[in-house]
Length: 456
Image (cartoon, rainbow, N blue to C red):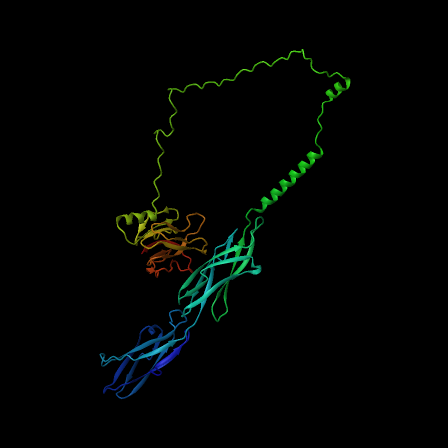
């Protein structure tokens, strides 16, 4: 190899020359094939070389690693398999070393970019590490006039190459708006890394009034009318007096009552006795209208994913995951468990919500992605005890269907497969212990989710 060690930056290329000499006594043809982790990015020119005895030839090896997280930073060994045609057993594998330089690329996205609330807003910040080296960053928020306070969890993140971190953000207005229309407050979240300018992501918090504006106007009008009415009443209150009494007093005709005059007592009033109600036919008490004379029948209890998990645990302890799908126009399906299919395939009926429960995994948490809307606030729940229902998505008819989801269990990992519209089943994707893993339609396609399978 000339040279035996080389350096290349992701997105560019470098060439190493391989010198080959025929030390045999016959004409031979040699074939060259790159092997190892760098083989997909290695080009050999020419791929075959014919040499006479005692002669030497050269082959150029061109390395072109892409600018992606797959191009691991640091030294990477490589090798070339040289196979003689005349002596196929005499294979030679010369080796070399290629150092790939590190690069950093971070992309941050706020989902959703606009949130509304009276007392708080809860967006999520997704930070993707698109480089080939680990990224450590701190997070902060700011806005003009410092009208908002920020609660960011976690405040610092470490992201491996090709991975993403989801950060929960809570926005709170420093002053509550009691009356009035909506007020838009722009803000920005900054991702700060050592030695580089911070990456800022802009968003908008729409603060709504606690009470509607028309209520304040109506209350003011009523108060003004009340004050006007009282004022007019006090100013023009009618004076009531007896004209006949005034005339008698002037004529001296009013005399005190005579003590000998008998005082007649008013006649006694007749007592009103309550009328007796006529007896009902049969002389018995009124019977309930349900016809049976007993308690009304109770509706059967809904069978959820947690119900199915508890049934499995009752038959024997172990790790299980049960789930069911809310299918558009069909409603909730019966729960299934441990790799069975939930939803529909090929019927054009999307999944709008998922109900999931686990055992032996210390709980499950997740978030949901919506077709055409991305991530929606308030879609994540966390249950730290087993056999408890968790619901992703919405069963409301006005809400869109699911596009995908993320899942995480707190002990071990969870695996999932997804089937989306006009697509085949995805391969099985498993989370690393305690971490998230997205499943469903690729974000750029915005396809509705039709069926899922889960295992733990």
